[in-house]
Amino acid sequence: MKLTILGSGTSTGVPEIGCKCSVCTSADPRDNRLRTSALVCTDDARILIDCGPDFRQQVLRAGFFEPIDGVLITHEHYDHVGGLDDLRPFCRFGEIPIYANAYTAGHLRARMPYCFVDKVYPGVPRIFLQEVEPGSPFYIHQTEVLPLEVMHGRLPILGYRIGGRLGYITDMLTMSEASYASLVGLDVLVVNALRVKPHPTHQCIAEAIDTANRIGAQETYFIHMSHHAGLHAEISKQLPPHMHFAYDGLEVVF
Image 1 (cartoon, rainbow, N blue to C red):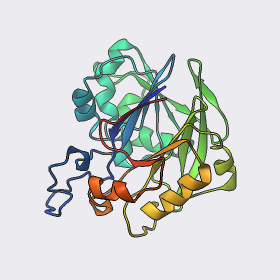
Image 2 (image 1 turned 120 degrees about the vertical axis):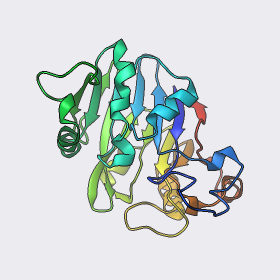
Image 3 (image 1 turned 30 degrees about the vertical axis):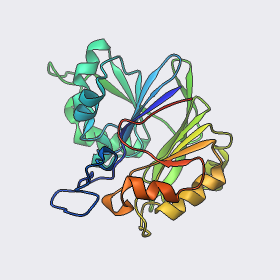
């Protein structure tokens, strides 16, 4: 299995427009963070997780143009779905299923109605919505995907366990005991860690470390960082063993 972090930043990205802090002006490419998204390649499937407004830039930078077998959407916020229209070139390979919970699917139909009508005009991305529920696994080819519910503040959103080995969670503040139980025995965990100070809807770094310790994956990678997380080279030194701050372009093979 191969995980590629296409973007590791929060909704504003890093650098944040107009900011002159040490992170936003850093020359370290690991401090330049596009909006959070990832690509997972299993033995038989290529799976995109979220498709934000930086998707076009991300795939051009990665040099990636191959069939996408499914897109897993965590929730409907713009930084996670704003690039769905840019899937159009990938639709040359065929229709692309988009997996989301019912709440998110409803918002996508309202936001992109031209994609979900009976008669579409030429050039519209050939995507179709598949509604999924927490705790009900489904398959993309032979790869099992288990959606699980986590809380983005007070908003229920989805995390995913993919192929039994990878857990991917973003924008979480808390999750239930049942969701924790769904993440036992992971090889790799990807989970959000926004900044040093607590936040009302996202985990801060200390909370993310606690979550990672509780889940106990062999390796954990933190994503969805803002410029308030600090410089990559400095904050990385403060992490426990087997925990890492992800960065754009990071590849993990396991």
